[in-house]
Length: 576
Image 1 (cartoon, helix red, strand yellow):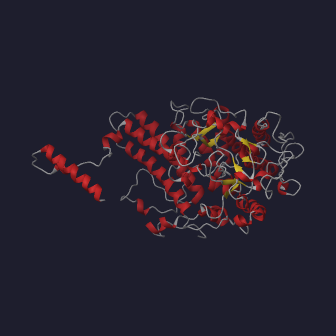
Image 2 (tube, helix red, strand yellow; image 1 turned 90 degrees about the vertical axis):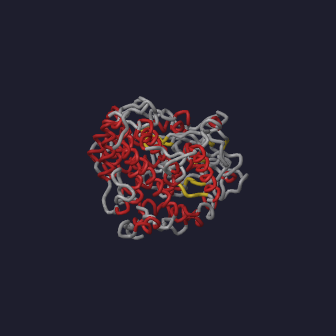
Image 3 (cartoon, one colour; image 1 turned 135 degrees about the horizontal axis):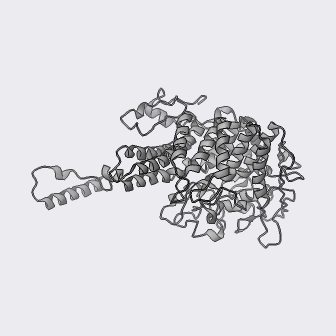
């Protein structure tokens, strides 16, 4: 503070000397450095800069736990992965993965604050538009407000899934004008729908800048919002339109990439499968423009990509789920964890001891998602096993793989400006076309169109069958890959639901969807307790004795926030 005061005093003295004589003390009223005037902010350039600030918050920036990758909230809680490393590192995630979270956990507050920061930035754009500058046309107002409302809908959607009823604040409420009195006892789904509907009605089909959202992204997000409320008819109508006519912001007709692995390579950013992705960039001078939430989620070894730190380790149950039958179809009966079907791994085998890669038939998407010993780890080398695992007894034998950079991406889609080279500039998908197809399949089943659902699932599976990983020496496939299509007509809705839901597990694994899917399907308790029993029996220190109850289908409201406004204003979720 002393240095600041000295600098301000020197500035005032200098100003007085330049003025020499003044008849008032107006010269003492100096705007803080960097403060923009209202006229600057309400100009077209100012409004667009404010909108970019709302976009920039999408990846969470310095709020790691507010990222839509949802690697903790969707994947670790969903059983795709465990926290990895050991009990002492980032130990605030330990109670989250064990479903022992309480309202004082700092990760909850980080998620809450990061998402409300995004809402505040979106509302700021909408508030500034109320007093738009002279160079702002009515068309500009619609264009900017549609994007701001899309982003606000996104941030509230994330909050709704995590905390259920949360305070809803729009551009008409600010500090000192009622914000402190907003109670979280109102269902905000209608407001989320309204924002996405406005965006869908007013956004263009394409954008001059590919990172900006378009009409089709808004329709997809609105359809997803309907799906979460079991409004299957409304969702189906939108999905039909999206699948038939949808295109990316840069004008590509929606479709599936030929190779599943290309989804996670920077070269294929903003491809035909990108419905909405957050835009990432390396080498900009700030790792917050890359993927700041993934810096710890790399194999643990100085020779491995990212160098550190072994977080986000794929689970045994998740890897076993990729086992297929003689027809290349998933084991929908849950037998993938049985002794006969469980995927052979090197857990318990000392580094350097002989190990034979599992020879059973398996879906190749497993090796695009989880690093397994003896299988090529992208283009680096064959995964060596325990030497790339920080503490196997706590995390298991697998490494995260999606969105980890390749050797060819070093220095281009990978950032070398910080303590770890693990930051990447690879775009991260929030909604991609395969996700749309599988959501649409759910809606088709509820409409009675089981064969259309089968068609959509087979589209996703056919791409998987063309995505086999080859040995690094080019001598053949790295494992015994088999993916079959569902060739028999689907005539039973319950079986069809099971197939679609399992396909989402395989296709979207480690992408932050699983927990939310289980909750909306009403299957979280049975699925998660089966996972905790199996993986907890192998990883006693990390998961042993953990159980899930539906109390944890939503998170507790952060106690810090309740303490600030009072328990009558911010009502705690049941059981916490």
